[in-house]
Amino acid sequence: MSELLARHRAVLPDWLALYYEDPLELTHGEGRHVWDAGGRRYLDFFGGILTTMTAHALPEVTKAVSEQAARLVHSSTLYLNRPMIDLAERIAALSGIPDARVFFTTSGTEANDTALLLATAYRRSNQIIAMRNSYHGRSFSAVGITGNSGWSPTSYSPLQTLWAHGAVRGRGPFAHLDDREFTEAAVADLRDLLGQARGQVAALIAEPVQGVGGFTSPPDGLYAAFREVLSERGILWIADEVQTGWGRTGDHFWGWQAHDQAGPPDLLTFAKGIGNGMSIGGVVARADIMNVIDTNSLSTFGGSPVTMAAGLANLTYLLEHDLQGNARRVGGLLRERLRAGTAGMAHVREVRGRGLMLGVELVEPGTDRADPARASAVLEAARAAGLLLGKGGGHDTSVLRVAPPLSLTVAEAEEGGDLLLSALRATA
Ligand code: PMP
Image (cartoon, rainbow, N blue to C red; front, side, top):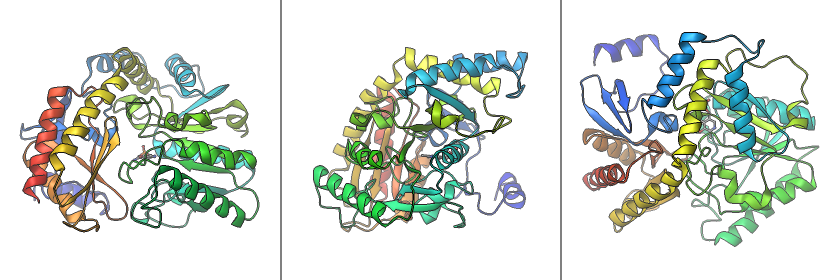
């Protein structure tokens, strides 16, 4: 065991998991690459769990951060904060939510926590509908809406949660339905769930594409169909865009837009990529919902000028360089390369996803059973070949997650795709 790993184990919690049998220490990055402490270079197909959204060491972001840091790192929400107001205006306009207000936090978990605070206060109810297999963070309230015990450290949430079907077709009773039948079945399930609920339900929260859950998308339009049912009862719809926002899915700027007959959600939460690695999270909500609570702030660090400078520079860059379009084009090429290369591989159940959010689901060869050990083996083999990947899925984490920075080039997509295919062949 390396000296650094021994120190990690001695001082940090036992549950702080590390990837790889011989864990990596990353020391720097540039573009779509990172380097370890031994000077070895890796193509980064996980971007620090989708946080390095644009590119590592993007000069525009580095400059904005260092200039702001040299002036003022932090003041607090007690004083006017120009970069925070600038970024809030841009996000409000992009959100599609009418009369939008924005509140910044420092993480996705806090963003969802705030959304729950608002929705429960607005509706005077602590009942929330969440989707099976979901992931929304690990605070005291977020674990209560995270539908996968593998990702929930405890089960003592203060919320009453109703679990809806619809995010994943999976292997269950809905597995063989087509999109229309599946949507009808999920809507019928939602109606049934609401019929069983006692009293008022506050909100439904969903990831438009489930992230940690293995990059699974419901049929387009599903949340529009849900929304009809919700609207009849005044129930709010919260879109958790922590992974799907900012063009990651290629076809859309926000994940909810795949369901866009429904219009924007009542609340939208974001985090991860907007700061290109700096800690920014937040909630966008209609003013009447945002202003339902009576308080003075909810966060000391949310909206910190240095992170806001990063967000502004990053957002400007990704819009000016149409990284959403790049995610669509390059992600589409990568998906087809992976589909073609895995055809006939008995341990690959499916290559799925949209834009630069692609999942490769592994199974025990020739069966439908998840194979988490093989997913770990592929991760190791890819690392040995110079490619970093992620893992996800249900309680069985058997899905490889491919989510490179959105500036990925065609040549890098081809190189990384081929490295992934070799790792899959080596572990067949
Ligand atoms: N929501 C989703 C959809 C996420 O994927 C995550 C993080 N994986 C979170 C919320 C929580 O974000 P954070 O880790 O920044 O608290």
